[in-house]
Image (tube, rainbow, N blue to C red; front, side, top):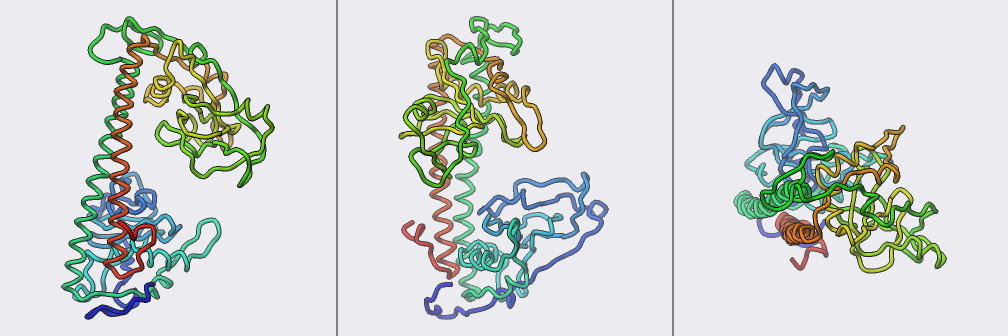
Length: 411
């Protein structure tokens, strides 16, 4: 909590003095016209708007009701920063608390979600959470959170500013979502049907242009190799890429572990630019991830990944990566998935059998150029989203009286 002195007209209050946990109960939602069910999985971190839900007609054991104007707060794993402003009525998980002002002449409901998004509130929620595997805070603990409450007219002004910033952030997010949708469409269209209208032939892969040929992953790669199976460390000679180092078809360097290797092993498992890493084993929703490596520096890769190296006399690495990330490419990969007790697997042998459409090299270059330009636009738009989010966070932490985090203080 900030130690700065109170502004004129502001007062220090406890959360429970001005907010109540509504805790409404609805045992027959379908009969009473309540249609939507919201779980924690439907609330996006640091985003007040609920875009997804389940349907009551599919059944639910939840009985907690929320109504428009309430603030929903995820009390389980508060570090995920899940807060939403209800814009419709529904039923929610018991791990979601439903807040509303005790008196709207003291606290505006439009300001409440931003108070709950502040760093100070989350710090309090985390500090009062209990449990090792799935820590939870409680309404009893949250009532004691202290914060500076502005007078009502200033609350209105602050809420208007914050909702305007939230709208700007969501417009950038929507633009990003639109670009992702365009990318998915173009991946499926261009890597299988090419650019423009072309005569097609029927193949085992479906319709492809008549002058393309059909190959397999084995035909168009020079290397198909399992990674290293050795203990991983927090530090060491070489960062090792794992199943969490994927981001929308690219390999990224986050949450790294390290290994020490002799020169022979390092040279055998060093990842080169243009190599494609395939996630061969994971949960059913994660197995099959594919990403191309273009990072600077020396990296190796772990045993649950398979390294593919394109035969560049036949296929461009980017084209192969884009195809394997397309809807059709993913379906062909997952057709070889074999479920285990807790993991799903796709062997290197089956990976080699996956069918690949093969355009002439000049067409591959044209297709890759279009998709690379879209990747650049997506990257720029992501930066806009990140900057808008940082600005919104800085405004929240400033205008509702909490300490401005150092990382956003220069926004």
